[in-house]
Length: 71
Image (tube, rainbow, N blue to C red; front, side, top):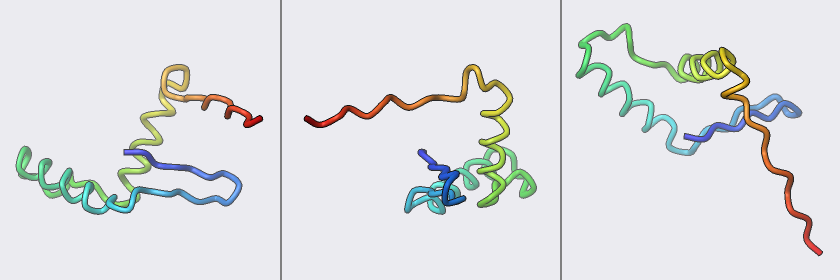
């Protein structure tokens, strides 16, 4: 799932079906563990992803390719 962080506008853009995907993850988590406390929240999942990526920025921080210039 691609999530876009815009540091200029201070916004985070998630896919249009983010809530559906989150609900599907929570269903799997609940079926596997039976523990309601392990369910992901809207912002909690984003924070978890951010923290995981920041643990090893050498591996997880990507620089996009420079856009090709149209002639």
